[in-house]
Length: 283
Image (cartoon, rainbow, N blue to C red):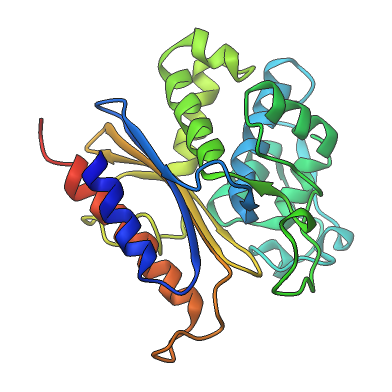
């Protein structure tokens, strides 16, 4: 793990932007991080905790995942993520499908539908209760038009370690009812959460440099200042490692003229590849 951490830091040090990360070796139980407890803009990685808070509410009978929901034109206002911003209002589908779209296409119309039923105060209480002390939800859907140099406190913030530990708790809960209860959930709902994360359609970061067909349960994020991805990588059906990576304060253009966001995609892909090569060989 020490050698892997040095390699990941070398990759980050070579970039003209800030990168923080957390990695956990799921076979050996070792972990390492770079600014792992420093708050950073969460962008859509926040939606993993929204999903789990919704599942807690469903488990407690406060929400029905089969409840039909419909979006109106009002839900499309101020939205810049996902597909439903372009769809004809009035479509009806189960709440569980809104949660799926919130994760796999990062759809913010669907996020708004979910957060309307799990309010922001409840989300923050939930994160505090399960130990995500560096995570603060500040709204249902981020406002448009924020400047590039906005403070962290202007948006929902989290830490690489918080996101890594949340994924680890979901993974543990999928196999053990006692661990699932820590999330206010059930093993069946934790397994469903992992399924949804594995349906992720955005493949440009953690999965990008891994062998074709590698199972990855992840959630990407896109913010004004950066790009990020958090996920569990499998070898076959065996969970291999958790990686959470946040590239922040990206320049519009790199010294070679390419966009800053493309450098973030490339870096996070290389961080994941380094984890794969170090932790992936058969043991």
